[in-house]
Length: 320
Image (cartoon, rainbow, N blue to C red; front, side):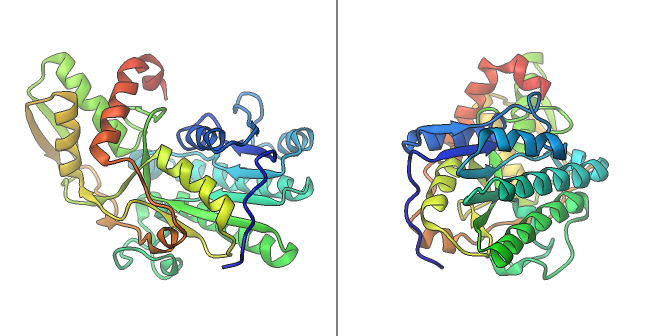
């Protein structure tokens, strides 16, 4: 890995996707780290799928550093039922932003991928070297292919132009600002909403999708934000680098913890007609830990904070 000088805190840092779960946490971490010029735009202000609009926007902003956290994201149902949109939208966002970043001379870029890039049955924990060694999980293969293309685009810019661009692969994210949509959200926010509504309705049962046996790793968005700042300061290598906590839980264990936090005391039942997805997806985080970073937020503490945010912002949270 090449030696990297800490970024100048006066650099203009553009966070693409700044208002999303990951992007907002990254912006908070940049502010906390002393960056004086952190910028971004809402999707209503610039559609990053529009190539001309993206180029015009970045020419106006002229960032020194760019974090590409903008993406079309969703849970297992959304990925499985809308693969065309997940592939097309994410490919366009990535190609447009990176091509525009190159055109305006962005010297440092971090592309945010996903742990779903790895094969469905990759050896656990999953090392970065597992990339492209086996078949993907069918329920989110379109999204995964788009993210793999983003990694290769970063590597191509490094090889052809000598760009100091990098890729980071976070595990499952959660936290304040998440999407709590009943069908299109990821598992943790979906459970928060489902158990909360069961308590409100006085229900004595909640149905859990799938068998409950798949194991998942969960990273608080604020830990991701700190990891992004850290990697911008210390990491410069063509290989993507994993960002996770190094431990996982079954979906049923996660459901029990969410139920305890929300105050649901009824029965948890399984809907076996729903897909499980990948049996296990635990990242090997030895490389990022070797750089000096480690997560701070414990899972239960993070769920408690996420639930408090959901209750305070419930009207907005249900729209996403």
